[in-house]
Length: 98
Figure 1 (cartoon, rainbow, N blue to C red):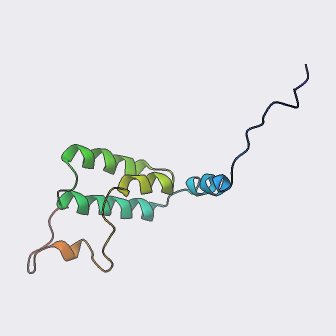
Figure 2 (figure 1 turned 90 degrees about the horizontal axis):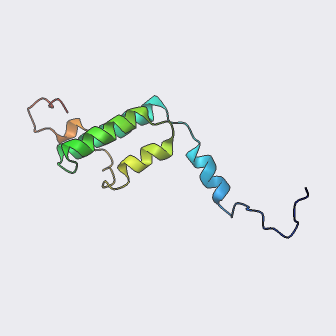
């Protein structure tokens, strides 16, 4: 059986290879932790419901790639530079559990 030379062959378009490589970048523990902290801040700001937070935090802690982590925070506002989680606590009070 021979292959018909007139049949189209699927070839990746421009930029597809870069997207594949970007999604294949394994996430580090630090990146997972940073995403978890960002989700905690969003939860404290009441941007996420209990269920959304629970699902996203579990996904963040088990994510294999940076793309998976990026998807978990894509609908959240950008982080404010220099603002840490401790900076959200009221002055003179210790930060809470989250």
